[in-house]
Length: 167
Image (cartoon, rainbow, N blue to C red; front, side, top):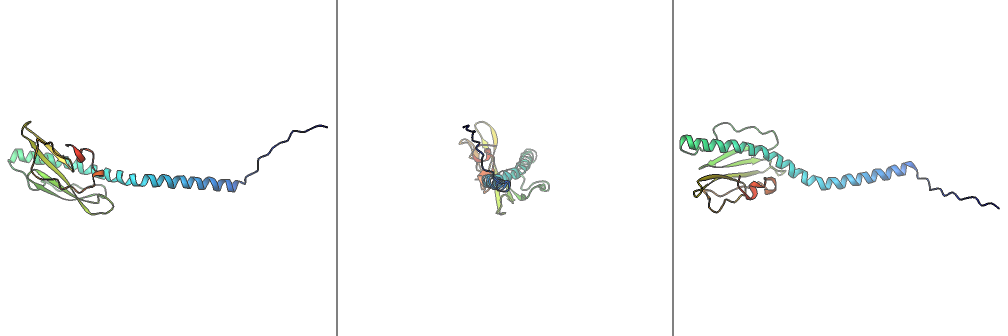
């Protein structure tokens, strides 16, 4: 009597149900990745919008110090027209006070309310230097700052230098 080897066959899975399972798994993975990515994406988009503001602030800081050096007094408004921004962010107005300025912005985040971003000039008489501080940054203990910061832009949108150090 001869014994034939048994052949084990795997059950056949219909292609339609296999495809449906892979599709469902793909959908679950995409949804999971989106829930992780979307909150960070909006934060990075808002940070990118504010980079335009910092390039404008460089121009305004230079203008302030130049006017002070040439005219001997601080200007009370920017010399030219406010620049146009390329994003949803809008620079509503600039408020200048004794060498310091606040940028009034709208469209910083989804709430579309106005926010202030302060730039303050601090003097350090011991070293004979002037340092600009932006946002929530705290001046050095030896520096004199004439006005307090009235920044209302959420700190997570600002660069690290405007959260705790000098600009």
